[in-house]
Image 1 (cartoon, rainbow, N blue to C red):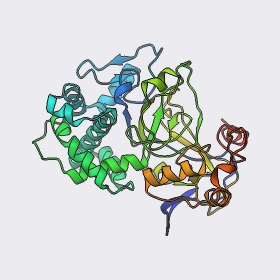
Image 2 (image 1 turned 60 degrees about the vertical axis):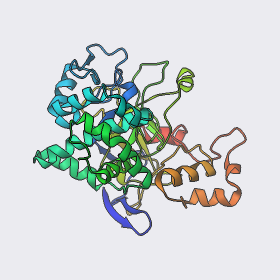
Image 3 (image 1 turned 90 degrees about the vertical axis):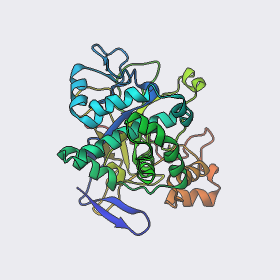
Length: 363
């Protein structure tokens, strides 16, 4: 159904190998890694990112008190998957929750804490891969194959976080490679999805389409149950006004290969608050028929954003200038004028429109 091809300008991408009909599942896959956000650690399952409000049987790790689980089954699975919440991760979380004054000074905000939590999981995964643990080898290989080369900003963040990580991992001072840490940070920024918690007014599970793309807790993502890549954390005022909080981040190997267009041809769906073996899987459905040889595109930002907002987001977060058909047309016509008088997307379909809903039907 899909194959990886190299594009001269966009790099690797996913292309259809047969006709895919509108509404058909284009891609469904499980995550490489899930990481709960620090501020949501008491209300989000560290194994499956399920929201814990109203969940009977939810439990907290009594050792580190920095991770919670929706059930004993998830807790056992996390402890068995050592890079999720094995002994080394648990001890690292415990030390991270009790950092000294010097380490606290290095942590500038919650984004740094979320970055540190991700790096703990990634570095523990690498250690297991070095030991030859089969699943860890496969996951680590996939993680390192993701696109992402560190910038000067990433190197500065890695330098600032190194003493925190060395304290958490009980490592020898200055033993962590700054370039390696910065590379992991960049790969997360470019490829992970920020998963949103449910609306404050409801605890009902949802399976909503997402309209933006990869990015993480400290970096960004998609919509529906996912936040736009590169979005800043919500303020307390926004939370009080009913805005959805970021519960954690998710990395997917194949989904990270889907390139960006501001008028995508697939819609993203997830169901983190539903029970079942595929609740953590990401699902992409075709928004219309896709002939053989069509490149699959998702949007890295909300479709309702105007031309200037989308251009700035793509440049600042991902380092490229979008030249898709929509951007070319809106650029020629003055960008904002493409929006309707009511502030709508001016004819460009979003996942809240009828077409997006139809694409999600069938299961």
